[in-house]
Length: 252
Image 1 (cartoon, helix red, strand yellow):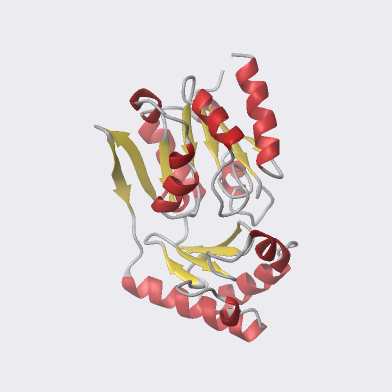
Image 2 (cartoon, rainbow, N blue to C red):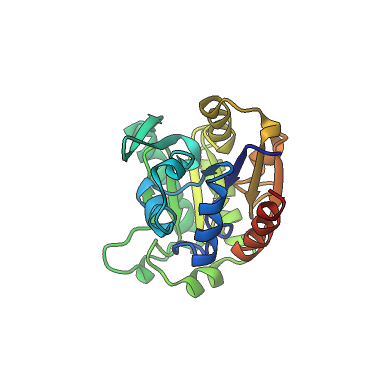
């Protein structure tokens, strides 16, 4: 029996950048009665709240104590204590690193013709400082789901941007995630970092964990988890995840 269920978010628990469905919310709440539940994603803390926590139907304090939020690929960690979410650790980039990464990504996207500034909604941004990583979202965070799915379904555009970024600033790592995103980090600050800290914080072993992700192929932001030797279920969407969770909960 596994002790921990860990999840990527976009395309694994939800439709990218949208709150989880009622079905997923109900299943996660049931999981919290039996497992430590650990979403780990490149997103910001407030998006974890909007997309997951706020969708849970009347969770108890006991249930929330088993929910662990590994933000920005696990380089930030929050858990629920004394009725509130508390940050346990944070490993931010320096201002100089953020500046270099941001300039590199913008230059690369512009050179390749993939800088879509004219498509941004008011108040949105293409490059976002998430403290411990910098994220490129080609159409911004507020673009419609269909528009995002259509922009780079085969990852080819982002693969070109990543290749150029590596030429300009090879001291950083670049991972493709979600539907339009690239996460830029310092080497080692990917999901290996997050999952390693998960092991330490929860006092568990790799064999205690079952991980769900949609980007488990080489170059995808879930692939480092596969490389660690953690048991992984590759899903195409949140419906696949729901199907697997119903099977897991059905045998408890």
